Amino acid sequence: MTAKGEQAISAEVILDTAARLIELHGVEAFTMRGLAEQLGVAVTSIYWHVGGRDKLFDHLVDRLLSQMANLPIEGETAVERIASLARSQRTALIERQHLLSIAHERDQTPRLFLPIQQTLAAQLADLGVTGTEAALVLRAVQVHVISSAVMQFTAVRGAKHDEEDPSLWADDWPDRKLVEALQSPTDYDAVFEYGLQALLAPLRAR
Image (spheres, rainbow, N blue to C red):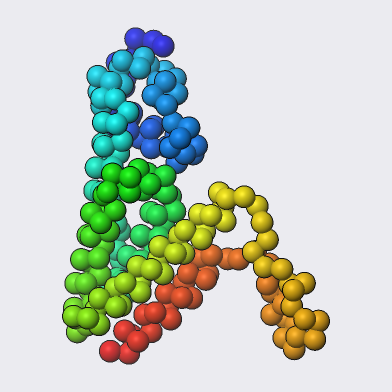
């Protein structure tokens, strides 16, 4: 540890580094000592800038709330903007899975998703979709986004296992190309996009 390192440290640098370590190794593996070693500073320096572990996690959740409330959205039409927001949310869920678990433990999940839901509701209103119909569409989009993110995260970081076993299909199954295709790894991005377009198809017809 050097004086130069101590002087260069800031709350923002600490939070950036902590977030990176948590997403790489998980919450359980995270320690303040490990963070200090990564930064090349004393643990006391971290306490001085952001507080202890719980306070640091609070700061990370606050940043995450801000990030989720300002996800990038593109598109000239309401349907395009809904699709763009869905993609941005899915990416954020995959990239910040461990930080999201910290927020969930602090009962902040509703606050995390509220800005996204409100934006979706506003875009649906522009299409004339309101009330119970809007609630159903909004939830359908959210379930699709969240379940897709969870499945991809599990596939990437979970234990290795076969998603399908083509040998279980009968040899006389007529669509052999289907059985062969199921031998390939799942393209979760393509599956997500296919499902998203199917969900949004009725809205495009309005």
